[in-house]
Length: 430
Image 1 (cartoon, one colour):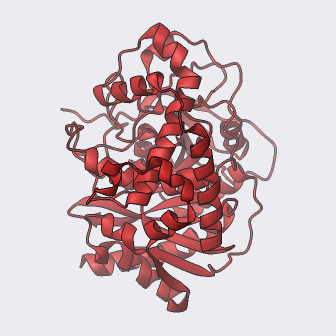
Image 2 (tube, one colour):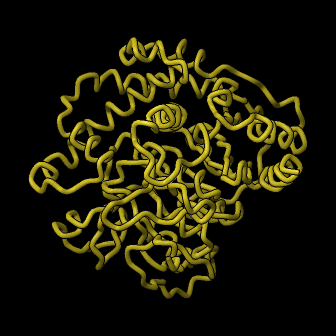
Image 3 (cartoon, helix red, strand yellow):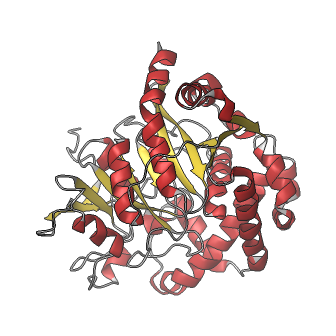
């Protein structure tokens, strides 16, 4: 079949730029794409589903995050495909098709910001906007071999963005180049460009790296060697994150099922953390969209359908316990990292799954991924997924997390480490 030159990434293509006489336009000359979850004046926000588009009218204003990058001088070239109602990390959409993963065409691109990641990975745009509630920027960035940034909770305005679950929703962005990632970040975060600050410590979460089915010399070790080279080995520390979280987040006991305690392939406290997060996410999703779903009964892909209807049936028990978990985890990780500490984990627990993999075989893989993804999700800390080349011809990545509000610091660290990480990957791949 003839490959779509746009890799199936777009639902709508157009050219939009703001004419401005302002001299300070750091994004001048850059192109970007926008996930179809952001309002853009005059366009219907589709939220990944034709029934949603059919039952909603055109937006009367543009989301502040989109306006900010337009005012920064960037040109928008279209809206991108996303998973239905943003409720998946796979990137498959039965209505609009699955955007083609430019790194691995037989694999899923990751979601729910699938088209935004693909547009950057396929070099159609310089950067793109997505959203990340449970992993929807970090996962597609990892699967498509590009940079993906989930900012601190509440750091970038989510006004004009269709909500999934307000306790966790963030506006994130993708780029291939760390300098562009930073430039876009400074605009969205409204943060001044500052001198890089050296991390006080880089904490390697040993148990999280053991979860991954990618050999550690292609993952953790690449990072360790790069940190030693740039900052010196004295700032490296090692921890068993699962044990630390279990001890410091007592409210997790409400989410520790017997099933979790017996899991061989997961870290029990992170599985409980994921349970707590998904529980509150379901409750808020129902609050946002339950009425619409019940009234419209949209046709949904099988895995998403199950998730959506489970949310619609949720009773919201344990909601208070979920909020306690959030508060406790935030405090625990703030104590662990201090002001300029970095926590290193794998973004996901392995390689991108094949297209149309049976959901039951993905169960363990997804469970591991959600355990890792819920660390930033629940704490509100910022996280960046950084590509580490290819393993078995498929993209792999590592993630760095920093304290809530330390986004500009984390962006600087990525810029400082990126070149050395690439060199280390090349040495390892030889």
